[in-house]
Length: 490
Image (cartoon, rainbow, N blue to C red):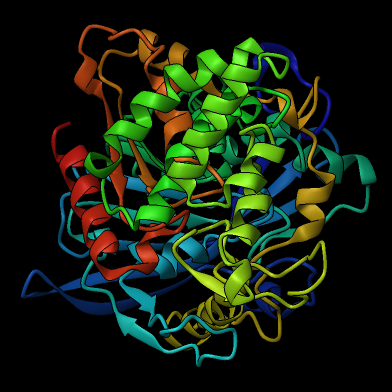
């Protein structure tokens, strides 16, 4: 969707690589709106008690209009590859964050890269962007390429057309453009034969599932596996107009109330949420007995005031839960991790708006840390460009297609991919106190998938913590271990 679709189903854009040594000195010094050429640096890291060398690349893939050859975008990437590894059999993972509008530093410097942000305790936007070697890096078992879609990170939209921007900021246009980027990166760096994985967080998981089809059908690139972290697979399940959404959130609310670390501590809540709760919900608000039963059980599981829950008819919204749980202490809970609380800026007001105690405390040091890594360690001459860690304009302008956001889903794409390719494996990881993309919503969706020959092809893991569970040391280790097992079983 970068321009009119051409015959044969090809994405109508061309990607030229910004690779080191490809341009003359005059070309490199000429003024340009685009990003600098790729820079390659060499480093070492200690993983599992052993020191190993790796190569880092920072660069961009140029997207151009297939007909006019006009520049459309520079899509920035940072990659890490183990030195001395046989690239033919060495897995390679392409990593995306979500939003839409989030840069890849969230997963990169939060969990996967050779370096990570040292997490402050408590989390604070003014914490120094201290970079430490990441003992939980995935580099032990896969090479890594972090991609920032247009409008995020250092990526730049070069065309002035509003239509071009709209196409980049859409479900289909995003998938089509990124499929070209991945294919060109693989071709340029001679990795087409490597086992290929797509790793996504939140909307990045939605994006990754959509990419499987675009890569296969348009770019002749097959995907070996998907690793989906805190995914949203069907937005309908997050909308209060869908009664099932109340069931989807209830176990995560209970996890916060109980301080639960694993699903075993929530077995009774899951059984209720997927059974008697739904039965009483469907009986409707005119059934006084059903209303009384479900209100009492919801108050019990959430720890909220029984009168408040009764007034809500046992239908508790995330924002209500986040504020009411901490109201007596004048605190509010993070939607991104209900186990983390912050101060309520207006504790005595009937209603309040607040910055999220996890998302909005992490974004500043993460963005600064990414700038440090790119300029100081990778030596990419990005000059004074700002790293776009979370671009609200992209999110506000995103086109989810017919039916809008509430009807957007990727479950159909996942079904198709699993049915068509018996080799494809999927790992899905959730945080138990994530109130943005609750784990039970995904669990209920997965229960509707056939086995596709082997039910173990789709693995489901729930970790302590929230949407970015890797903020917690134990969950970052568990995430790495689950990903390693998923890659190695292929």
